[in-house]
Amino acid sequence: MIDLAEANTGLWKDIVTEDMGDIRKCYNCGTCISGCPAAEGNPPLLIRRLVRMVLFGLEDELLDDETPWACVSCNQCMEMCPQGVKPFEVGLAIRRWQCREDETYIPPSLPELWEIGHTQSVHKQGELRKSLGLDESPPSVVTDHESMANFRKMLKETAIVKSAPYMFPDEEE
Amino acid sequence: MKYGLFLGCNAPAIRPDLERAMRLTMPELGVELVEMEGYACCPGYGTFPASDEIASLAVSGRNLAIAEERGVDVLVECGSCYSVLRHAAHNLRHDEEKAKKTNELLAIDNKKFSGTSQVRHMIDVLYHEVGTEKIAQSIKHRLDGIEIVVQYPCHTLFPSDVMGFDDPRNPHKLGELVEAMGAKVPRFSREYQCCGGAGGFAARSKKEATAFAKKKFDAIKAETNAEAIVVSCITCLMFMNNIQTDFGEGWETIPVLDYNQLLALCMGFDPKQVCSIGETLKVPAEPREKFIEKITKAAVPG
Ligand code: SF4
Ligand code: SF4
Image 1 (cartoon, rainbow over the protein chains, first blue to last red):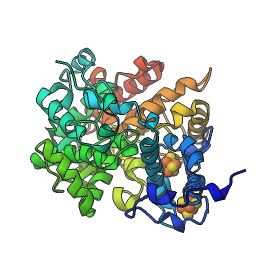
Image 2: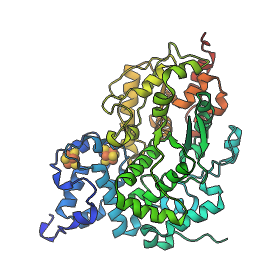
Image 3: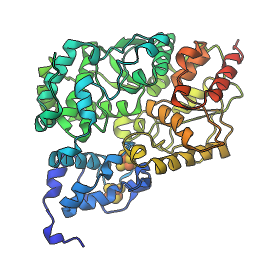
């Protein structure tokens, strides 16, 4: 049983910002679920339910809930929600809150992006690329030392990198 | 016509045959591709957008600033990159507070977002700037008598007030681009179903994501005579190609091609360069090769 007396009723203000849709307008219709691919997952991503959890202030349950990370970002829910709640953005906002509350949520792709500027090794397919008549590497930050250094300098000043600096080590030259 | 080609991460690393196809076909249609030197990841929804909004806007804003420096609009094929960059440009244009914070970060990298470059998807540019007529005139091999179904990339449709260049309830532009080359594009019940390949869904719920995709493929087989699926999003391309290996024994693979790959084949470019990476992904090469052979043998118009 969930004891609502222990809920953090101010939770929604920590998660959604004013520029987003007003989640208090959600009337639980389920439209955001009916077209959602990830709603067929195990466990299912049920945005409607997450919106309730945020509004009721169920902090502990929400912090343990990994379903927002299953979102495929198709944005169908953004198109269809009749109340302008912006369900996809709510999902992203929950993920950001989870990262702030518990750094184990910080995606491993972040240090990767810090290291090479990409989520894939675009600079390690030289032979394949050349065999197709392409340059060894695309014109990316990863092969341009100066760009890379400046890119990292910028990232260093972001809140997320500052919050867990050990995940973003400076390159030893 | 000039565009900054935003390649993202997946095409150059995993499907460079698609990159080659884009680089060969667009100039044939009078579209000059400008390099976006120093670009980085868009960044993908599972990275900065899911952890730090301003950092995310800065990484996107940096990419957009690179296009602005070159005085070009951005051309994107990947649905996710398009969605991320387009959302970012929208937010930065309409939210002064966020734009200010983002530009403070960008200043560290000697960059600035001003909002002068538009973000355009490949389908949008091909349909609205190049046009179906020019495409029809550019090809050597026509697709007459061939049925092809298309996958409309969700990320390019929704939310339509930010993404929109096609009708979100009845998208048809990618289909028309395929029809321009002579193919028949049949309608079917699950025509508008998402492939389900992006984000964490398939990684976290492999079985369910496979079943979800299978429903769509079953509908294609039951309701059409499609010989190929044409997409215009790298995620749709990789996922719809690869997932077929999980459909079990006896499944006959339907080749999945990106529109620019199909265009390159019809223009007569070397299939080994523009449409060759299927088998490295453990999908049997034969169905694709047979389909390619049919195209390269198809009648030259005129
Ligand atoms: S579609 Fe909108 S109003 Fe309906 S349940 Fe989802 S968020 Fe709430
Ligand atoms: S954007 Fe995410 S939550 Fe919304 S419908 Fe798509 S997968 Fe579901």
